[in-house]
Image 1 (cartoon, rainbow, N blue to C red):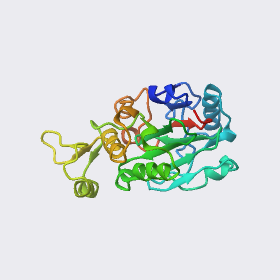
Image 2: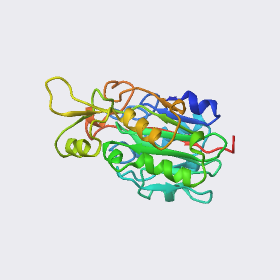
Image 3: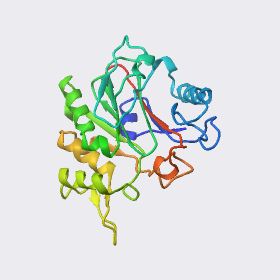
Image 4: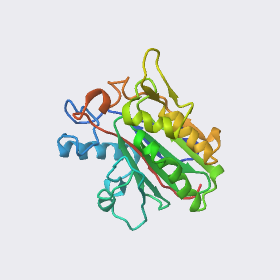
Length: 256
């Protein structure tokens, strides 16, 4: 039902990167769709979320996500916060140190990033597409955790399935923005015979984390392209608006 990253697993952090399999939604949302605003039948979506929760050991009352806007908003979830309240707030990053809270993002090509810390109860999730990359959503999240006195050397990042550098083609204004902001960055390349720019979100996120002081050995990448694997993942770029969303989650536990 979901993949785990070895680095977070070794820390004892319960987490997962879900795909599209083993759920109850009907085509074209088959079958583990967790998106409530993409046209699927809402009862089936909630049933899918319950399936994930039973597998991972959490209830829907613990599950917090926000209204993602491909921006740089960061939402801190506190122990007294209700999940329903978080879901109505705009943010593309969530952080918490409250034991038992489950933070999640929903994606269909954008990069889900899960963050844990050794010796700290802080965890975070980040939704990063090309717009969020331009707005530095990941560096801002890491800065927020460091400000909360999390030692940067103890931060661990897991970069989940997303549109790969084989498929993330930028042109027009998006290409110009990246070329101006990240000139000669190793995350970009041109395919032979094309003028468009291709972006590696995994490499861009890794570089941002390293620049913030995260140890390279603490970063794990699950290199699975959502566009290239239609049986395993939903993809907005491949399927358009009538596609589902896969959930990525992390559970805050006591200090390890």
